[in-house]
Image (cartoon, rainbow, N blue to C red; front, side, top):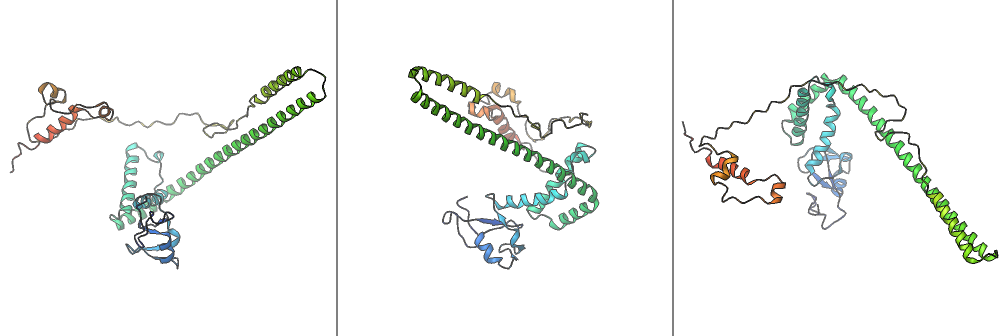
Length: 309
């Protein structure tokens, strides 16, 4: 992103490494200094498209292409309204059609395609599905609260574990220091031979190490899924929706030319004699010599028998 620059003042990241590019709802980029200069009163028009903008709606550009930032922001707003889930539909086909409709709306708003009709469509949808939207908002809020609670509990458990480890390390260091001081005192005051005192001290140090290194089990309060231990959960299997399996039909294409030999016969007919053999790297990526040759023959034979009416 070093070659990025502000379209107004032409400042680049190469000349100013601290350059911060900002983007608004229209998807056009300005540097932070130009935003402060042009929107000193809190609002103004975009220098590129003349769209009315507010200063507090500018945000730091995260992607190299500002259109991606625009699409991310639009997608967030659209999904707040189009928040239906799979269980809200009677069939998987209806749910997939709904997802395609959402993607089409995001695309139209991102690339300014048929804006007026798209906005009217969104307004009508909001009126017709007001209750469902509100219900899913409440459900989503509740799920987010449960997730945040589980994350907070996990954070507290990790913090308690960290404090326990620190306390054990301090006790370990203090016990070592006391044992060393006890050895020095014994060497200074005891009448036993030094080698006996050292052996006794060594045995004591080994016992201390063994005692301190014994792991202390911390009883967990939640499972890895975030479900609290002891919580009553439903074990009923999810309802299955019976759907017809997809029946694959081979694609029939009229090439208006002579029939193309089958892939398995290309080598026997000599078509692969002058085709580059696939390397192990090509095979790993899915490339085969016969497939490439077959596609080239399709292109070559296509339209040879075409006659204009």
